[in-house]
Amino acid sequence: MGAGAAIVFALLLGGCGDDGDDKESSGGAESAHSAKDPAHGKDLSGVWGSRSEVKDYTMVIVGDRVLMRWEDGPDGLCDGLVEHNEDTTNLVFQCANTPEGREEGVIENVTDTDFRVKWGSELDEPSIFAKMTEAPAKLPSAPEDLPGVG
Image (cartoon, helix red, strand yellow):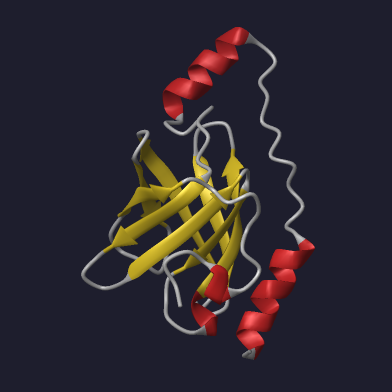
């Protein structure tokens, strides 16, 4: 296993420290929040896939944790969180094979079968992820255990 993969797995095993609690105190604030954030209140847990002319992606979301493979080899694995803030739901990754070691995307559209992510840096075009299957009980601990890989 390469050094990059070891770092990613250490992050995966150590967790990222967010409890995912995003509760609003008043009904009015809740309504305004959900109108701005298309992913608010939706369970994104599942195995998702995206194909483009450039890359294929596999993403596994379990609760507020996410693991994504975006490139072949041990450096193409990213560990991250689904973060909810006032207006958006973001996917924030720690990646071994990016210039900054980090990738972030905003979820722009969500249906029961797919969602669209507008990436922040590495990727110019948004990605549409289609649901491949239901989420596993926990995130895979090795790249070869990631659905659709290996």
